Length: 252
Image (tube, rainbow, N blue to C red; front, side, top):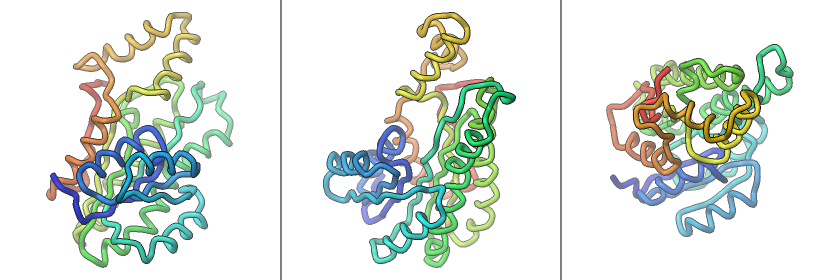
């Protein structure tokens, strides 16, 4: 499908899933605005993409930073796509050993960030009577993942936020959906497998195989597949209030 003439704002766009989603939307013809906390990462991705790509520094958990971003982009081309991707993995530990500060950081970025970005950028979409919001959650928000309570709880919160918000702005013509990837190949999962191997006294390969054996396809998904899924969701006008699993068939 073509996204020509549309502008997408992608949080956490300097690396990982955010950069992959930006590439897919850009390839589909959209103008993309990448947002994150590290200018050098954002600048690098925009240089790779070339025309129709811009960046801005913003801390999505900070109301003042989000307000400044909205003011900075007020005269920019119409933003009709918001991808709330920014997130952190948080600690890997039993709940009783997790610091309050670490718990709060996960919720500040993974949940509060979604709230603040929607609060800032939904009103123009509602006013125009069209727009799309895709909140990136995780299959981990819907199944147990031992030693990852802050992350799982935050992603379940995003799913709940999305389903309710869809009923608030859907009547105005704005589609709000959740994309829930399963384990995605990359540095974050490499870290998790190393930690699990240390905890269980097994090898990295054994830890990874135990994890992916729960998927019907016997593998993780790729960043490129997540980007393609986002584009596909934007091509479904009747999709609203949905939570789309992209997990290679991962089961609870």
